[in-house]
Structure formats: C-alpha cells, structure tokens
Length: 128
Image (cartoon, rainbow, N blue to C red; front, top):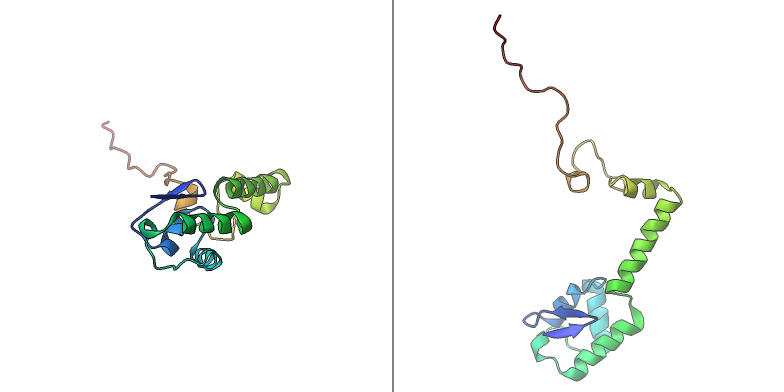
C-alpha cells in the first residue's frame, strides 16, 4: 500500500481512482495530478514505482492543499461566517442547511432524528 500525503491509498485500485481517497482530490484533480506527474491513470497502485509515487507526491505538494491543511481552511471559513453573523453562519450555528434547501420536509440528515411534538396519543377511556 502506497502512502501519499499521509493517506494510505488502496493498492488494488487504479491510480486515478485511488487518489480520490485523499481529502481534497476528486476525479478531475486526480487526472490533472497524474498528467503533471506523467503517470498512466490506468496502472494499479501496487505496480507503481517509488519514483512515480514521488512524482505524484511532488505534484500534489506543489499545487494543491489537501487533508489537514484544507480541513483547517474550511473550518476557518465556517468559523468566520459564524463570527460575523452572516446568514450562512447562522444556518451553520443552528445545524440547518446553509445553501437554500427546504426544511419543511426533508433535511433529515442535517436536522437529525424526527421528534414528535404534542399529544397525538389517544387517551384511554376512564372508568367513572
């Protein structure tokens, strides 16, 4: 298993797919990185030489922020939005969707498990 940017990527997958396991690298950037590093996208990770892995690592370090560094930037951006009390920041604080999605229905992933409110249970008949 090869280690790139502190992430152990799966050795049985093709390189262009395996690079997407790194936070901040998707299919598009994966292709660009392999083009810069002059590595064939269809080759399996287990068949890469140390030189090729080094070239891929250099290509990532030179042009992209990935993993911990990128996560710090994203977290900082969200913190800034919260601090200035922008609308998006308020949505982040309230754990609600921040990009305009509806919340009357759906949005369960963001809002959490449904909580039933009010007396919907039938009252038992009382003996008199």
